[in-house]
Image (cartoon, rainbow, N blue to C red; front, side, top):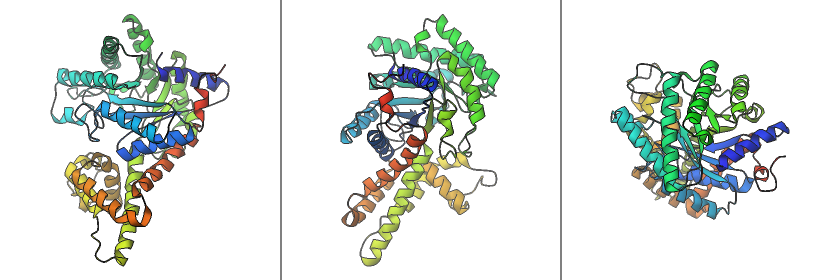
Length: 412
């Protein structure tokens, strides 16, 4: 049995005993975020999932610069650094057609993007991923949302490919996640949600793949990139549909959520957090730059790093910020947008450019300027992010949660 699948079975059994847990999935959108998540897992004895998109980590390096194997190696290096004996699980997030920006930009056909996704899934299996999010809910050639039947058909195709590849490589079982928090595929409606699960269940059984039944089903629970209120009632309704299948609901867009403590109470099995931790990294570096300016006042000859200017220039040049423009902002240059919105766009878009050479060089100068006065500035940034991650560890009842998953401590 896949390790994450065994964890979900235990979480369901624990719930019957009045113990409510939600697994946290951190999106590893930078080296500092990955390090902070491993550090948080180690000192809280908490399991940790790492939900990496095809944009972040892929065979071409993604925007982090990591291939799947390099990502897992880096995670394990931090495991050793922090003496982390806990459960760390690299995972694929949003594995599906046209969900890598480059596939849309290059106008790949369905056959081309499917081949690319399948090749990436194979690379992730070889790298040791534990969970694959199968999400074929986007079709750039279709005029509207895909019918549920088409989503099921394409989900079955990708799961069957992953299982065949896993068997060919002689690898241990992996867990699966299906569905989407977006409206693509029409899965937000409760009736469609239930029909999707029923058809998927029938399809996997018909292909002899019942053991590949997904542990997580992603659905809309009230949050998105601009809303932060988790809808507990909606989540409880989804839980009632998914739990009889042996699955739990997983929420995406958990960033800055107002009521994270409601997640375990509603039966949520997992939750992804991504842009929030990039914003924390950004805030930490802005705070360090303020200290750098203070140092410069006493050392007029110091060459300032210009970190924020370098970051803003890189975010601007990436053009990725334009996908979040609101009505009235279309056609404006980044520096023409009102300050609070420009700040939000910089924070949110920073995850795409942490590895930009100009940003890396400015960050190195910032650290070098500060090091004589404060030791290791990088650890200040990592600790800043770690505290943000620990907010969710506490809210999701994950502190010392490893005791529930270790041998001899399984629920009755």
